[in-house]
Image 1: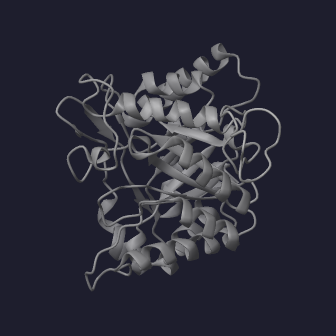
Image 2 (image 1 turned 180 degrees about the horizontal axis):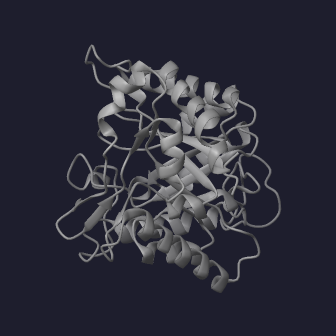
Length: 343
């Protein structure tokens, strides 16, 4: 099954002398350069994680717009925006503007987000849960997501001022700028089977990462494949008239040089891991893949979730710099993807 192959960048930076990314400026500018390089190599997507209160990428839309202005073909997305922190209408303006700059290439992954650097960080952004049962903000995130989805449909909802500063078109007004087609390019990052089904009911694409709720003790890629199957079934039941997209993320490190071996040679025996991401949520973390390309082809052929997804996002070690990460992406595209029928 041919696949779109992109990268997912968390945008870590640290002032350590061993890091190639030592500041926020380094992280942002190198993210742009990596997207440009990935497009030149033939990759299909440049995706970026969003974390608040951390030395990582945060506000995504200036970055997405900058990449949109520097590239021509590559999809530009997020994996994921934490909706607990977002004003849905202001986000609709930002997303519409960035998508128009990029010529309709945004693929926005949104979700509740992951465990945070600070306690209830979204409260500092001015958002309070609707009731005490929403202690982790999950319901707030879903509510913000539903408003955002409605707004970007482009229908008017706001009564116009009878004495406006500028002439208005007839009828109710919508958030501007409106970008046609963006509504079908929204993805939900689902950690559980239930949220994957909920995303399908709302017509969002599915984004499944290297972590999900451990719901039955099976290997990670098997649980993820089951989640995808449930999503597809819910999509059909919802009656949507277009096909959804589904992405999975993986750490894949082809070893073709001494430098690759120095960095990743010790990860050949990586296995799934199980842990708790909060007091009550048991999660399973998918293994990393690090080996020579022919070995990777054999290992990845058994990954049921990759087999059924249409998009694969390669998580990159961004602190190793643009050149090295471009090398990793190129090696996957050249030496691994063809052997698996992805290209």
